[in-house]
Image (cartoon, each protein chain N blue to C red):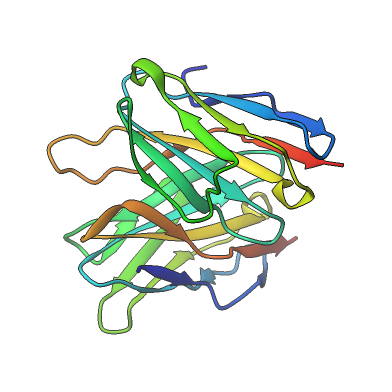
Length: 114
Length: 116
């Protein structure tokens, strides 16, 4: 079965600095990868996805993620963090051979300090 | 608001009572998912519908849980004989899956269940 690992519970960065939130995955077939963000008392909001094609995908709010097949990773990045980026970030994966079940990581809490 | 809506937003119930949650997906979406999220964890898949058909159920979904999606529109999730371990946020999501394309799911704000 597919699975996702987010190795960092918490990431702290200063405003204006680049940020990276890490994600690794395990699937049987080709992966379909997603990043979601969750603000307090809000539902999950879609940021970006990788299905096929270019390894670097760009999404909402200036976020991007790089798909690395050899390292089975899909790290989320942003060149310059904003205080308003502080939230809970979830990586998720669907498996080409089990396309109906999207598995989420445990989440990474990003805190951007002024 | 044309997003996914869930009702109620919060529910407090006594152990042993039955509860029912409702989800209204984005109108043209043919897939509807239910997830459960506990504090400090990512959402866990419970079940999903393709139109009105319930096609997959997680082993997390015990026989006390039942979900329906009559007419392929809104969905309900019922929990019978609630237990304290059922306390969680219940999330609904919907997506439009057609022609083999893989699309993202859009989530509602969730129903927070507290069993006392």
